[in-house]
Every structure is written in C-alpha cells, then in structure tokens.
Amino acid sequence: MASSSSGLTFKLHPLVIVNISDHHTRVKSQSQPPTPGAGDATSSSSSAPRVFGCVIGVQKARTVEIFNSFELLYDPSTRSLDRSFLEKKQELYKKVFPNFYILGWYSTGADAEESDMHIHKALMDINENPVYVLLNPLINHAQKDLPVTIYESEMHVIDGIPQLIFVRSSYTIETVEAERISVDHVAHLKPSDGGSAATQLAAHLTGIHSAIKMLNSRIRVLHHYLNAMQKGEIPCDHSLLRQVSSLLRRLPAIESEKFQDDFLMEYNDTLLISYLAMFTDCTSTMNDLVDKINIAYDRHSRKGGRTAFI
Image 1: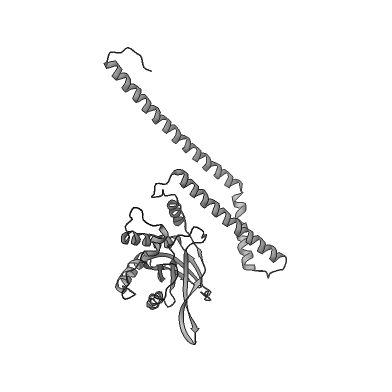
Image 2: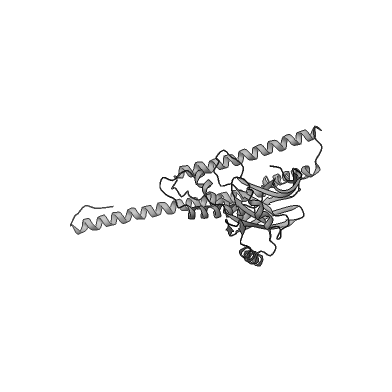
C-alpha cells in the first residue's frame, strides 16, 4: 500500500487507542460469551464483529492531533452509519469540547477493506479529508509496534481511471499528564485470569526492558546521524540540531544541586511511609497475638486452671 504524500503530521493520544480497544472488547464479549475450553484469543478476535466510531481533535496548520473518540452505530446490511446518531453525538461533544472537530473515523480489522471506502466517502461532507484509524485486534507477540494504522485518502489514476484509495500515514504518540497516569494504572491492573504476583512482576520488568531497549536504539540512531552530519556525509539539518540542543539543555537541570535535594527529600519521605506501613502491620499482628493469648487465658481461668500465661 502506498504512503501518504500530504505532508500532514499526525499525533495520536493513548485515550483513542484505549477507547477503540474497550469498544471492541465489549462488542466481542456481548456477541461471543466466554465458554469453557474456548479457542485462543487470536481466533476469537478474528471472528468478532468490527466496531466503528469517530475520532475528534484539532488541526493546526499541517499538524493533526487526535485527542478522543466516540462510538457510532453501523448498519451492516446497508454498509452505512446512522447519521442522526452521529449528528447527536457531535452536538453533545461540541458542548463539552468546543474546540474539537470530527477528524475522521475508526474501525477494527487486520487491514482496510473495500467497503471501508463507502464509510470514508460518507464522512467527507463533515471533513473534506477525513482520517481513518484502524486498530488490529489480533494478538501478535512478535510485533513490537502498536497495532494501529492511520490512513488518508488520495486520488490516484489506476488503469486510466481516477480512484480514491487509502494510503498509510506515519504518526507519533502524544500524551498529557492525565493520560500517562491512566495508562500506568491500566498497565498495573491485575490480570483477570488471576495471574500470580511473579507473573505481573515479570510482565512489568519485560515492559521496562523493552522501553529501555527502544530508547537505547533511538539514541544510537541519533548519535550515528549526528556523527555523519559532522563528517559531512549528509547535509546539515538545522531544525534537527535545534531539537537536539533543546533536548540536551534539559540534562543539567536533572544534575543540579536543587534536583538532588528535592530527589533525596522525596526518597526519604517514601522510605518513611514504607517504614510506617511496616510498623503498622507489625503492631496489628502483635495485637492479634495478644487477643488470642487473652482468649486462651480466659478459657483456662474458667476451667479453674492455675497455669500462668504471659
């Protein structure tokens, strides 16, 4: 599939991915109730019905930032969306987010289908160039990238006939503080299958290792690129150099004396809270032990025993 030539920069927020995943999970669980001895997750996801919705956000110049999404009603028989429901949802979202506009739509599946173009064209009266966000629900443990693809539509001449086709567009993940907290909370949720603490720890450490590995690989690429630029092997890119310079200016702030003092203060507060929690737990255990001894002493006293208890 061809790549986009529009020159637009897409920024996708995690909330959109979470919303689409939640939409797919709910529809799949309602249409396919879990049964004992069911097949693997891959086959179950492949047979689950597709879900559809709209993505909203803002566009500033050549930058398109997708912040949120909402669900849509889809009629498989007519292959169309419920426009009255769409207009009602759009009106409600405009009251809460007046600066957000409908940027396109989303669906689930392994790849874009021919029928998707009908939905895409139907939304062109709202946005003349809508984007198509596709989430692949199939589980692929070997895949390192997010199973999310963003498509644009472009007019290409195929066999002498102009046709509107989907083209892939690159994107980056953009987050705000609230989203980072939410994603971290979801990542630490206990698995529904009752996984052990060791399993959760292994998954957490694997995620940290993958993140560090990816960071290291990107730093290596940037280092090689700067070396080649310094040697004159590639032309000098002043825009990239300004970005690197801005990134490096943040490092002294991390190594400052004020940062060390604040870090040690937070670290000591955390240790103090841990110690207090440990003392509270020990005190509670000691109280339980004393209560048991007192009960045993009372029972022994009622029987006329003379043995002394501590």
